[in-house]
Image (cartoon, rainbow, N blue to C red; front, side, top):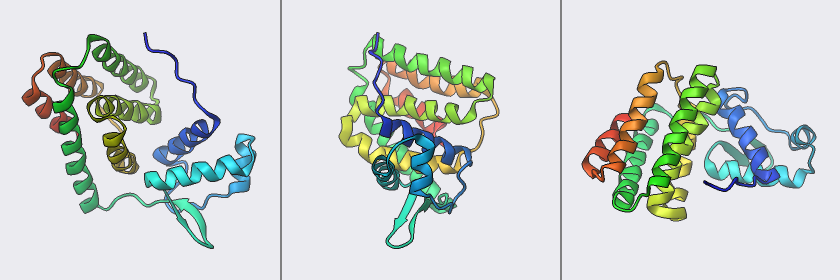
Length: 201
């Protein structure tokens, strides 16, 4: 049983703003107002500044001197294509590192995230579904390469999700992620690569 993670106020604010950006509630080029955000979350402007810096590093925001911070634009088609290629390479590398060491408990956690994705799809909670999809891949990238690999992978993925297209088929969603888990369970790197490439588009 995994211990429940304590989420800091800053991370809660960051998560809320990520959701707003992924869902489109905060549209590209929208300027952020530190004072309004501080009031919204009931905090001082210090934590808000920290969150803005964090989301800027992730690529979701753009900050310029004397102009302030605003929501970044989605990737161009060419940049999206490049990001997909880079993401595949990173996740294939992670799969190679963990294929012989992943435990039953870790596989069960991945399966629990698939179940959660299915439930969110049925509930029409597409922003949370997107975040859970990210969490699924993030989990095995971290298993395979730790923080060093995760720090390369995360900004690529989170920026790609600004171009996210709503999933229309729950069966496809479940099957593609289940194929990745089954390949890990079988210690079959070739099958894992095939499943990862099929899922990342």
